Length: 80
Image (tube, rainbow, N blue to C red):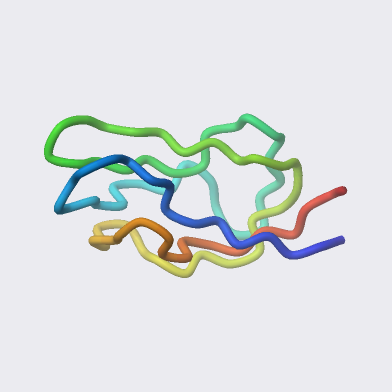
């Protein structure tokens, strides 16, 4: 297995991005395309999908955190 850093995607010109909710738990297996995080800006809510199949190894940013583009939100062990 390989580690993958799950980061805040580029959501355009926005001043505040809040990590509203994790849709999975540490240790949970996810498939590529599963929604794992819900982010909210001042304009809209954005679900973040897992780009790989694997396991959410560690949550770095907790629910309610204000994040910016490129912040590491969690770490996954992925199946390549």
